[in-house]
Structure formats: C-alpha cells, structure tokens
Image (cartoon, rainbow, N blue to C red; front, side, top):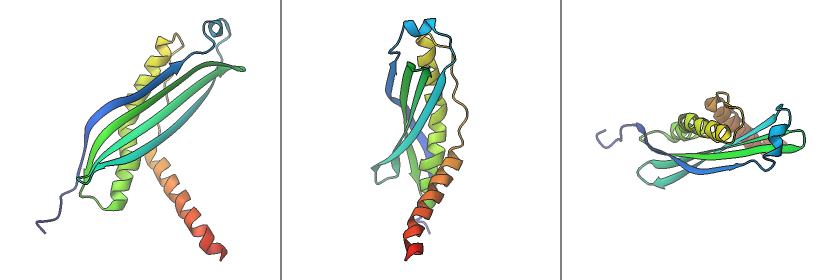
Amino acid sequence: MADEQQPAFAAQRIYLKDVSYEAPNAPGIFLQEWEPEVNVEMDNSVTELDENGVYDVQLKITVTAKTGDHVAYIAEVVQGGIFLVTGFEEKDRLRLTGAVCPDTLYPYAREALSNLMTKGSFPPFLLTPVNFDYIYNKRLEDSEKTEAEPAASE
C-alpha cells in the first residue's frame, strides 16, 4: 500500500507556443461595413514528456473572419501547458489531459486572440465558453461507436 502513488494533478507551466495573425485585405477591409462571418476551429494535443507523469497539452484555436468574400483576419494561437498528472487510472488521466487541461488553457488562448484582433484595429471578439468535458465525452462516444461498428457488421 505504501508503494501506491498518490494522485497528483498540477499545472507546472502555462506558455504561449505559437501566434499567427494576418489581415490580408487591410486597409481596404476597414472601409467595408463590418458584418463579419466568423469561423472558429479548435483542436488539442497531448504529449507525454517523461515517465513521471509530466504531459505537454496544447490547445490550438484559429479564428477566421470574412466580410463577403474578403478575409478580414486570420488569427491563430497555440497555447501550451505542462501538467503533472500522476497516480490516476488511465481513464481518469485521459479525462484530465483531454478535458481539464484544455479547459485550463482556454482563458489564456482566448485573451491572446482577443488582443491580436484588437491590436489589428478590429472590434473586440470574445470566444464563448467551451464545455471541454462535453467535447471529450463526445469524442470518446464517437470512437467507441467506430470501434463497435465493424463487430456489429460481422
């Protein structure tokens, strides 16, 4: 019993991995009526850094705003975090790195994106809250369905 590792979860470092911003149609885009169509794409990745339960989790968010056929801006942020996740069963560890860690990184990425857009002279744009637990559960459910489908067709 003394050999069992106590569960530990901690953010050891939050960092900005990559930032990209372009306004390909500036300054002409500023003369158009501002009724943008905004597209937000989000993805995350998890990399084990060592066998002691240290993981690098990265949240990538890309925001593209268009007015008509013209791109107003494309802003992308990759927000990273180094997390200690040790002493958990695999399903709990996967939930922590797949849902809790991205949820921890999201406010940082959201602020970085908002600052980019404002510095580009566009109106502030705040990303809405995201339920990463729901997204994680949906991905898990979808992968379980995909694994079950070939067996069901046999």
